[in-house]
Length: 201
Image (cartoon, rainbow, N blue to C red; front, side, top):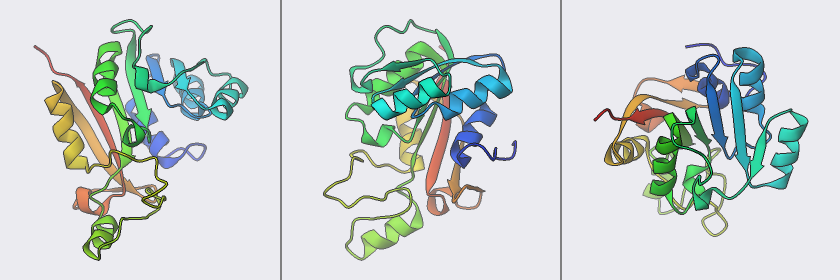
């Protein structure tokens, strides 16, 4: 595994390490396009970002990233099947209403999907629940009444969903404060990263 890039968030650096040079990448909920800009410069990747927030779109333009402003809840209509090698969805799936739809769409337009999300199985979340409180943490920083996170899950839950959608988990890891956790990952990691592909028929 390549060391984390000093110019990227640790989770984005890990994603970048999973992406081969000179490939096509679609980054959903791409923010200011930092990942795509890094991949373009370091790996000669061709990519597009999709972002609904205007500040993110402006950031993409400033970073020289091709971006489309749209709501992911409507799916990826307009993108042809198999038009990308990788489709990335970072720290967004937990706030989406139609999780199964976006996973199916990622697998339709791309060969490989990469998703990151707060791992609800992290021990501090379990500890707070044990004492009758909804978890508040670095990766889940909201109170229950104002959170955009409507579909929280654990690493194991997400792996099950990927398989249920006819795909195969190729790699997964968890991080905590930017560091990879290998011992009891579903318990000790606060942020999950999963790479998956369509299963061969």
